[in-house]
Figure 1 (cartoon, rainbow, N blue to C red):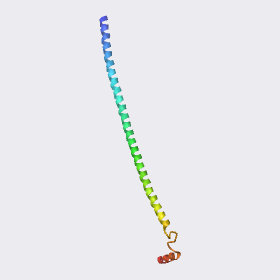
Figure 2 (cartoon, helix red, strand yellow; figure 1 turned 180 degrees about the vertical axis):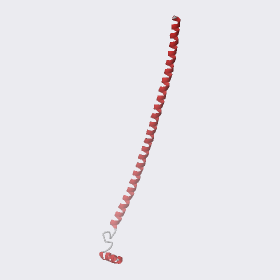
Figure 3 (tube, one colour; figure 1 turned 60 degrees about the vertical axis):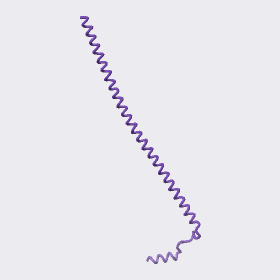
Amino acid sequence: MVLFLSRYWAHLAVILAAFAIVFLIYSKGAADTKARLELAAVQERLDLSEHLRKSAQAAYTADAQKAKDAQDRLSVLTDQIDELSEYASNLEDANRECLAPADTERLRNLWK
C-alpha cells in the first residue's frame, strides 16, 4: 500500500510538472504574442509620426520657398516703382496738367 501511494505521488508530481511546463510554454507564447502586437502598434505609430514629420518638413520648405519668391518679386516691384518715380520726377513738365480745363470741356462736348 505504501508503495502504491508513493507511486501515486510520483505520478502526480510528474503530471504536475508536465502541466507546469505546458503552462510556462503557453505563458511565454502569450507574452511573446503580446510583445509582438505592442511592437507592431509602436512601429505603426512611429511610421505615422515619421510621415507627419516629413510632411511638415516639406510644408516648411515649400513655405520658405514661397516666401523667398514673394520677397524677390517684392524687390523687383520696388525697384520698378523707384525707377518710375525717378523717371517721373526728372521729366521737365512733371507737374503740368495733362489737359487744360478748356480741353476737358471740348472733350465733354464731343461725347454729347
